Length: 56
Image (cartoon, rainbow, N blue to C red; front, side, top):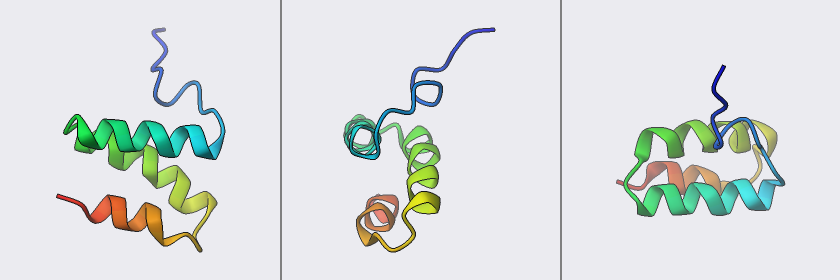
C-alpha cells in the first residue's frame, strides 16, 4: 500500500497549515481542501482555514 505524504504524515497543525498554503499556491485545490478539512474539524474557531478554503 502506497502512503500519501499529504495525509499519512499529518505533522503539527502549523505544518499542515503551511502545506495547505503551498498546495493552494500550486493550484492543487482538491488536495488543499482535503487537508484543510481536518484542520477545520480540529480547530472550528479558526477562521483562517475557512478563508483559505474559500479562495479560488
